Image 1 (cartoon, rainbow, N blue to C red):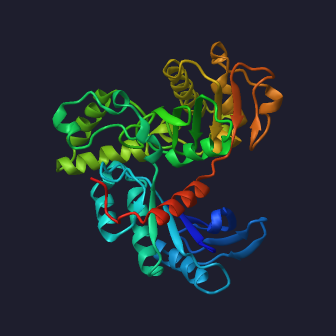
Image 2: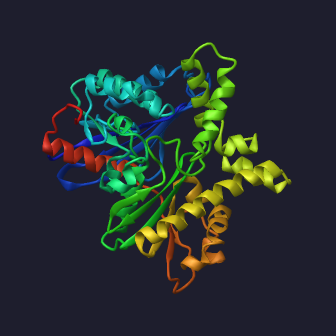
Image 3: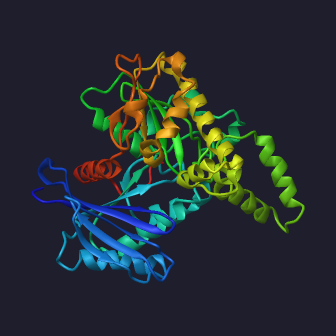
Length: 406
């Protein structure tokens, strides 16, 4: 395997992010990264940078839909000016009980993803679409789906089993967890000195926390879907089930069918709640900080709620791990919001978590705890693309059978 350019795709509602790595002969070297932003607008952005950060492409094309945007990426990679991929890796956020492993992408596998699309409605439809397009636009190139839940496969049964009747458990209803590729990347970057007892807080528009013992996941905040766990940008996180039933009954009074009522409830829980729902302003922490600075009470409450649920979750993992050696902040908010880190850790001194304000006054990778702190607190950016490349190489070597696991 002398040369193996691997294309990594990670798509959002209005963007397609990608990178290309050279992965031959054990090498892991990023060649390019880029994105198509502003999909659905007449003034999108299409850029590519090399490994040193130099812009090689910088355009502002009309991007009326995702199909046009992705074809633009494919055409450029086929042009001969860049390394055409020999394999493609996709981040797969899907709660389908038959799709928890990393595996080869096939039309049948994508059908299985879409069968469970309502469990991750912000991610699965977009991911499935990009996978289908990749099979068409890169014919003959093997595509692999890297599960965002794969890292959580070590969760014990007492964690995964939900307190529900057995007939629903038999349908695959259990906790599976997400952001696993991010967590795996933190463990990877900490090698060979992975602490025995580790908590990682992945804080972005989607947010979750994981308890990791000896490099293996012991517990995580999200459940069967990304909606659960701590408060996120537009998701409720964990709420009293009776609250959802109450809201559902209110919705049902003015809807024609149970399906329509469920759709409205789903939209509320996934797209209108969380930081956005409490603040009634924005799901972007930067907007909320600006509003707090001019005295917006609702923005302050939203951020306080976010921090409170995170601190509670960190505290709850402490006895599961029988103590704590290291706490890592990662994700867009975890890396860049100095105040969030300080506010979360302010009430955790009894657990040995004490920040140094001067060290915390930084964005990017750093140790931010006080000298000789019982718990080391670090900021580490995730390296999700690198982990996806590693899995693609392993899957190619193993010649994984291209069918969903049963």
